[in-house]
Length: 239
Ligand SMILES: Cc1cc2nc3c(=O)[nH]c(=O)nc-3n(C[C@H](O)[C@H](O)[C@H](O)COP(=O)(O)OP(=O)(O)OC[C@H]3O[C@@H](n4cnc5c(N)ncnc54)[C@H](O)[C@@H]3O)c2cc1C
Ligand code: FES
Image: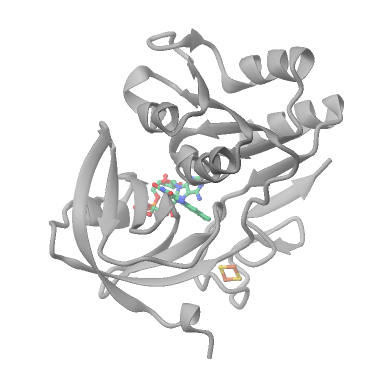
């Protein structure tokens, strides 16, 4: 049996606050995974939920406290255990050598790993990071520190440019086209980016979220447009 299917215990090695409701969780293990893949985290007796890999060595996740499971994760301390299954799902695959990465909310998490991969290969990496307000921005400094060019948008104008990521993307698609656009974030943002990239003739890879239970293409709970997003996705290509 594939090892990824069986849960294994990981010990929490460090926790960092990223913004008002998001923390990075660093575990004492590594994993053989690619940017865009996810793992199922399990707290026995509570639930099991999917999270994108922020880093593979050590295994790390950036997790927003939005409900019962993520709030329980936020209550963990260094030394506590969490069970992990994975990695699962389709990864982003770098195409060309000039990449435009677009992240909304905690969708920025898998893009940092992708940015690092592209930069290590000597590629050009531009990233647009958006949130409603400055306090909800995620991983801006880390993405800049990795060496990517970063543009920030907030809907209320409290940091960066007032507006949405699609405003910056529209300009960059018109003035300085990338080879490929990659994005992760809310469905509305992804749908708008799919239309923009499609109109500009730029290939795109988008990571779509769904409610997941098994994570391995069995239960059907992540069905979307005839696809099982845990196995056929979460990264879907187009253009
Ligand atoms: C492939 C994948 C990767 C993910 N990566 C991350 C990550 O890196 N970091 C992170 O913080 N979260 C990530 N998530 C989302 C996370 O799994 C969910 O938010 C999870 O349901 C939280 O569990 P909960 O019990 O805390 O909250 P829940 O009670 O499940 O949800 C709380 C609130 O969030 C809303 N919500 C939950 N899931 C979704 C969703 N998929 N799309 C839109 N709204 C939703 C619910 O409607 C509800 O209002 C990912 C999800 C998927 C499918
Ligand atoms: S989560 Fe079960 S089929 Fe996708």
